[in-house]
Image (cartoon, rainbow, N blue to C red; front, side, top):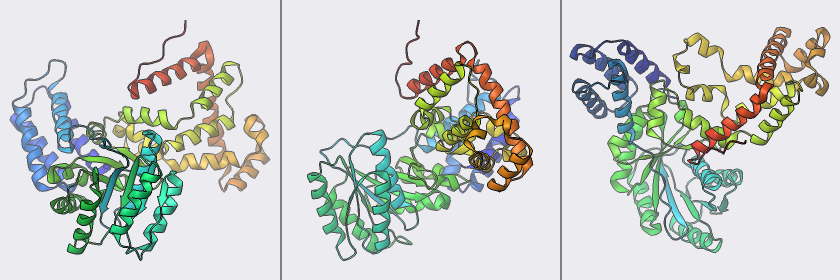
Amino acid sequence: MFDSLSERLTHTLKGLTGKARLTEENISAAMRDVRRALLEADVALPVVKDFTDKVRSRALGQVVNAALNPGEQFVKIVHDELVHVMGDANDALNLQTTPPAIILMAGLQGAGKTTTVAKLALLLKSREKKKVAVVSADVYRPAAIKQLETLAGEAGAHFIPSSADEKPSAIAERAVEEAKRAFVDVLIVDTAGRLAVDEDMMAEIRALQAQLKPIETLFVVDAMTGQDAANTARAFNDVLDLTGVVLAKADGDARGGAALSVRSITGKPIKFIGVGEKIDGLEPFYPDRLASRILGMGDLMSLIEEAQRKVDKKKAEQLARKLEKGRKFDLEDFREQLNQMASMGGITNMMDKVPGMSQLPKNVQEQVNDDQFLRMGVIIDSMTPHERRFPDVITGSRKQRIARGSGTSVPDINRLLKQHKQMQKMMKKFSKKGGMQKMMRGLSAMQGAAAGGRPPARRR
């Protein structure tokens, strides 16, 4: 996400971190590179100008923190201003109203609006424990109604049917009544998208907003359209009372223009960021975390929160007990670790959030990708249960059979077995002197911290 912008900024700022002092000359040189990087990232020109002016002003007038060298202080100034441009802090949904709390979704066709409706429904259901209903008022595209019905089933949300021969106002009125009868906490209303902003579309959605009086009106934009996303959001904000923006398809955006332009241009907060096509690919938008990722500092808090939600703690504890009893870490255990990693978005997603990983040489980063882990999984799946439990039996003819069954080669099998041996040795070290249990307690403590709770008490 935002790879090209991150690469340019980290390269520019790296040249300053070793400086003994900040001068007008080296700050100006750095700001020229920063300005160029932001413009190439398709950040709106007024936003770029305001950002660079503020960074330069703060850097030249800065009393250098004694705990940091001048270069590090400059990086902190850039980080803080990036956070400020994107909104300072997460702006959560406001659902404090008599149920059902109505969320109206707006956006252009193709921006990912209908998918975002289902993603938001799942997020509210799984994390906020809300009963959610969804309805489509898009009477111009019957396929959108069917799409929402399918996605609602995946999300476990209550789907309220609608049809192309109804008026959007009638659909909205009926949906509210049904949501009340079903004791729904949140009703999400999908609306028609268009290929461009037009008067008919604006009049229709404006009438729906006046009728429904939603507590939240969210505008979904395709992050890959750069500053055009911010300009489109502003056009909608001129006629609608928007409460926030959702950046969809952010994982496909190497630039970052939308993320850095939307707040300044519209005055409305980015509330969520959508990544990937999977229905669980929607996250609350935290400006400070994204700024850290853009500057190559990682995002450990999001990684911990993701582990808290997606890592199967019961299976992890079973593995810890198994190893502490002296049993070996076998290929079935290895396969389970690959599954756990895939549930967290794969190695690429995890590396993006680990501090310092973006500083690795490009050729090293390219060698570590999700394809190789998918290939490992296919190889293990091509083994017999006995081979997975006792990898030492895998020799000559067995390797050839596994290679044929997995569509790989014998060298691929050898690499996997070597990597498994290395991991087996590491797990053996962990298992000594209660290491695995300590690791599990550490994970629990991190999860408690991420959830805002206290770490579990130490056992005596």
